[in-house]
Length: 103
Image 1 (cartoon, one colour):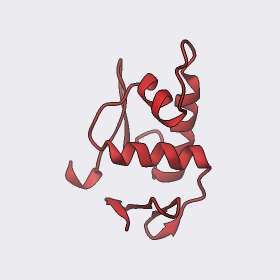
Image 2 (spheres, rainbow, N blue to C red):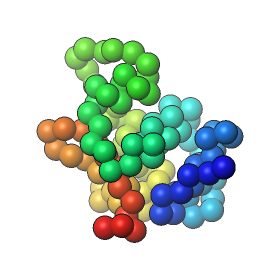
Image 3 (cartoon, one colour):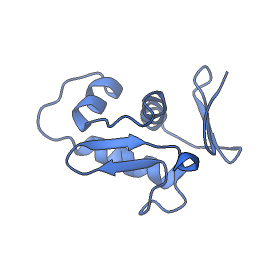
Image 4 (tube, rainbow, N blue to C red):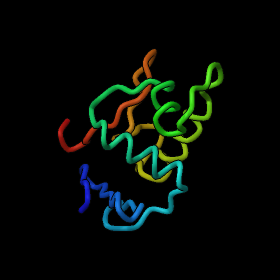
């Protein structure tokens, strides 16, 4: 069974993700991050929430690791990573995944 958000399709049982029908070459963390975003579509997620849920640990201080992974994921799923359609930055809060076909 797959989960579809616009042109993205993810297969949780197989750890596979596709964009426009083409398989994405994601690292395990990028996949886990994308899957977590899709599970929480339209919900603003803080960097701390993402660290706790995707990396399975509490990490006080430097949350740059989240920003780096979001940036890498955007490069793989966005047509223009500077103007993301899927993973939006919510300034002062964190990130959220939106379905670009619903906006």
